[in-house]
Length: 415
Image: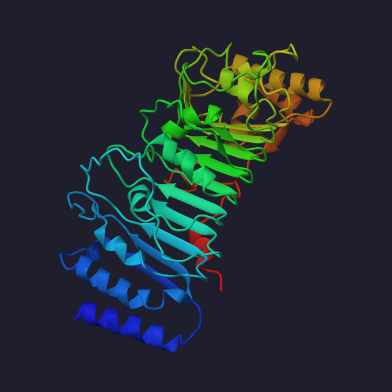
């Protein structure tokens, strides 16, 4: 009875809409999981597929049930319903499906399987889980925003080479969000592999270990302005730069990068030789939250960034440093002095105030614990209250305030 009711409502909506553009959204929650769900979904996709030429927005999202319930969508066979469809006015496309907890897919190193039989020149926004993306990649020629999420509990098996293929297939890409564990971490560059060019990419949020450690030598993004890493382990063996033909001049892959965020990352490298800082030398806004230094005994990364020698100073163009003082325990008096020394020395070097962004709670604790250095920080114009901790907005690693990355939920609220 419930299936017939859903079907009748869908048919009524399609009839009332006449020839107007369609917004099709399927959301399936744990209470709706049942053995007959797949046939019902295939039926609904066939019904709506007859109107694909009117699709403006399409979303298929299944919220995975909590343990001990399992899921059985691993083969994604029903996604073949998209193969012969034409969606010329489609603007947004979402497919987010769960997988069974113990799925170990075969390593995927081939070409992605493109869906839709015709072009979708208006398609700008794509959000998909990694397994569905492998099975039915929509046309990417004109998209501006791509979000890939992991649906596999163990580890993903998409080769890093495919990541480069995606960038080369999306010449208009502006916003890119890659979830944790989407690409295979076992990466060895073949001799035939070529670099990817992301000419218009401006905002990149990366929670994928393979991409985070391998992208530096293989991606050119000349206008990249914001780079966010979340839960990435930067080990000593990551290569960040290659030299030019003279074997001396480093090749800069992200010359326009101005904002760098390191959220819950691990830095397994001596602080005196911090290659990530050299690879992102032009950064003016640095955000560091959580994480740790595995090799260095220093509890805080930020205070150790202030080298007084301008030629060796990490991130010499910094204007704003945002961080949390309570991530790894309360700072000591020496730590407070070190923070103050950093912003003061940088302000002298830059001839403009370098500001430290702190939460209201951290600021109040500093003022109480060490009023002398706090007053010097505040009166010198070096303090700025931080509006929000980027980790507090959502448990989703791809939801990080306050940066201007598109939220797909917001698009469904637009007329």
